[in-house]
Image (cartoon, rainbow, N blue to C red; front, side):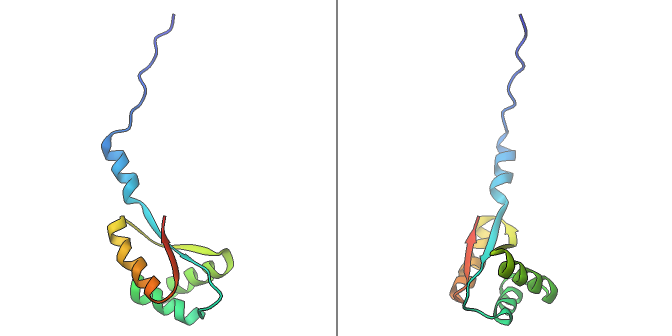
Length: 92
């Protein structure tokens, strides 16, 4: 007879941490110029020029890029601002 070890049940704290790790994802489109997207990332997501440029190239070549990480409530206004500029963005 063997003794069963108790199952590890995640605590509330670990579940809450997972919920806080959302990503604002920018998706590719065939409409906007590189400069337009770079400017939007600088103004809305507070990226520096190099970071915005790298994200824009990733979106272009890979189809999408995580441009910001945070809680849903932090990312929602940023997503809305990107959508207002007719860019494709989601929170994942």
